[in-house]
Length: 176
Image 1 (tube, rainbow, N blue to C red):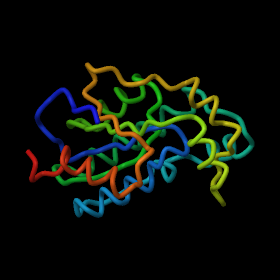
Image 2 (image 1 turned 135 degrees about the vertical axis):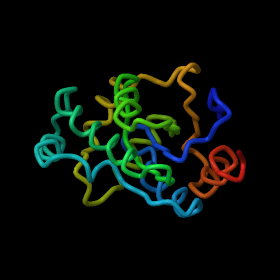
Image 3 (image 1 turned 120 degrees about the vertical axis):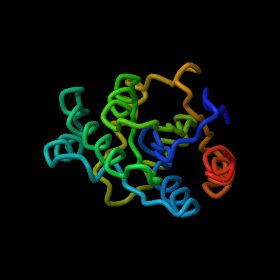
């Protein structure tokens, strides 16, 4: 796990990564352990975005801007309270847009793992609008966080409870 660049641990956390990385699972577990509310980024997508992705068409930046702004607004609306939100946040410009819209410090946690594991997980999902065919477009779009961004990086290979236990040491208010 790569630590953030700053010692402060804001109470706004975004779990990021491509489809199949476990954002929702890890985000819900982490929020539960912290006693904070959880919001899944999928719930912020307008119907047109969901329809596009459901039909196997990747989103373009123009589709993403309102979605990213809505995620940032949810982080801002939480005020000083803790909140955990998921978002693919594939490009640095997307992460910067969320930070700007949030108007507060945001800790990003990048769930990273091998393509084969991601594809296996996506293939096993039932009832999700994101088809396996879009994994490669997400991986092509992904701009891995650089050290100057202060993004925590966690492997998706351990069980979710182990990932969350490691993250708690980094983001828990008690660890500040």
